[in-house]
Length: 309
Image (cartoon, rainbow, N blue to C red; front, top):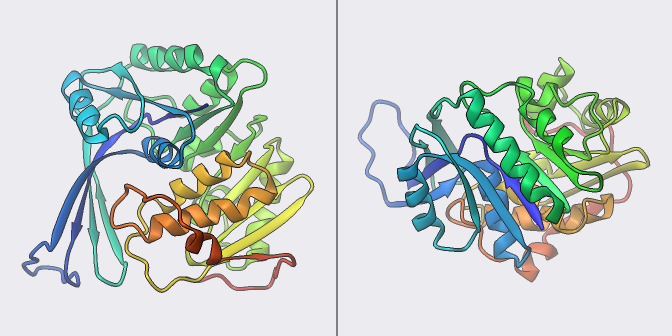
């Protein structure tokens, strides 16, 4: 089983719109609403593909009822009750796949809320192979929340973290099994631009050298690269039917964990990400053979390759 934690869950509203023009009137062509947040997205992808998972999230009583209705029983949800209602995030999706996101900050949580969240995860952990901390931290949460969660796990249960900024930086130096930054998050961590694939590999290798078991970096249209103490692997997929890139990174992480989070599982991870890009909303459809067919795995890493802007 894979347990996910979403400290700052959201209601994700996706609006399909004509080309975005600032200051103009836009008529929405399609709309959907889903229970969201990065950890919940990971659990939903895992459940869609038949992998046991539980999603843990701090929610008010009203938000918990709404989340349960939106999930429709597809993902087991463990709620740590708090006072504030979940934030609403809006994704504006244009026909060419361009996505503009507007995210609310979400309600604050107290020190007691944090203690109960850590306690709920610790109670579930003995039945898990992986615990995954994903997404931004709400107001009031300590920046080392993910590090604290990792330290609370029993021996044999591995921790994966998908975070940015201070929450990611607080994990450096900890023996966390998997860190999953995107390129921009890794640039912030490294303190410099990462213009080439070689730059990304060098920065990820530096993180592995601090104690992380593995670093999986999502690179948008350039695919993804995984770095561990024994080597590097790069994979990508060129597709011309992108519908929505929201959730592609979460699907990448879910696919990587489902295979066991070894370097050789990168192809599966990218295929799951392709399925996400071909889905109209954050609810990823089941992965199909054509998604795997789109994946190209590079046996030789082209360090000098310049990455898309």
